[in-house]
Structures are given as structure tokens and as C-alpha cells.
Image 1 (cartoon, rainbow, N blue to C red):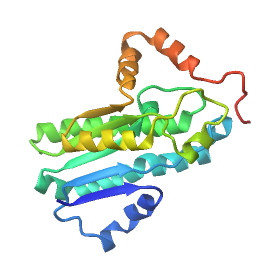
Image 2 (image 1 turned 180 degrees about the vertical axis):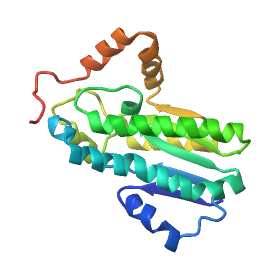
Image 3 (image 1 turned 90 degrees about the vertical axis):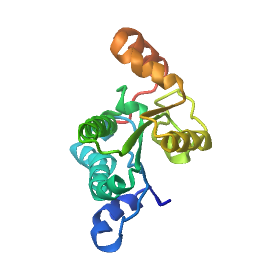
Length: 206
């Protein structure tokens, strides 16, 4: 079994050098779990910040997927895409990051349909995760959210289990599945739940 896990900014450089330096033959799993983050607040709305986040959090995923898909098709493998709750439910002070994650959800949702109608047996598992207990993540939302960070190892286990079982979606913590359903069913209660997790007494960074 051949598994390629791409995490961190190294994945961005890998996307550009793959053609010359890596043979994806025999690949069974591709796990895309890299991200670029910007501080929460109005500074993150700039065109420069948005361009950077789209490049790292969306376009590099597309490029790596296009390179790996022939090998995954041959092996009937799995593509595991680690995304965020902000790719399903937009919230305050995260406009560019949320846009990139929504793009991920739309692209891979459409790709799943395309592979299905072409009888290509490549599983796509979309993982919807919340805030994790990493120092970089906590620093990025300091003073903006009251949401509690989930344990990283448990989130990783949920991702592994979802990929191994070829699940179409993974939600961790599980309550995020309910929140995503509320987005379409009851938009006003959803907005109330989101507001409760914001530290609205602290102004966003200018």
C-alpha cells in the first residue's frame, strides 16, 4: 500500500516540483492536509491575503489531485481531503479562508459526481474539522472566538478511519454534521449558534 500525506507548506512546493521529482505510480491514498492561514480580522480581507489563501488552500489541492488521479484510478484508491467547518458554514472574520474552503467543497463535490458517472472507482472523503489544539490555530483566532479546540490526535483518527472506510464525509466533532444540516434547514438558529462562539466584545484587528 502506498500512501502520500501532504501537510504543511511543503505541500505547496511539492505541487510545483512533482512532475520532475516524483513518480505517483501505485498510489493508493492521497491525503491533502495542508493549509495557509491568516489572522482573523479585517486584515485578512485584503486582496493579497485572499490570493495567498486561495493558492495554498485551494489551487494547490487541485493541482496535486490532477497529478495523482491517474494513479489513484489505476489502483481504485482514495483521495482524502481535510477541510474545515468554515467551508460549509461561513462565520465572521474569516472571509478569504472560508472562501477557499467553500471552493474545496464545491470542487471535490463536483469531481465526485464526475468520477461516479464515468464509473471511476476513486473514493473521495471530505473531512470537515473544527478548531484543533495547535498553537498556530489558537493564535490565529485569539480574542475572536470562544470555541474550544478539539484534540488533534482524535481528529487525526477520525480522518484515518474515514479514509480507510471510503466514507464520503467525516465530521469532527460530530456535532458539526448537525450544524451543517441546520445551514439549509434553519438559517436563523444557525446564525444564533455561530454568534454564541464569537467574542464580540473584542473588536477585530484593523
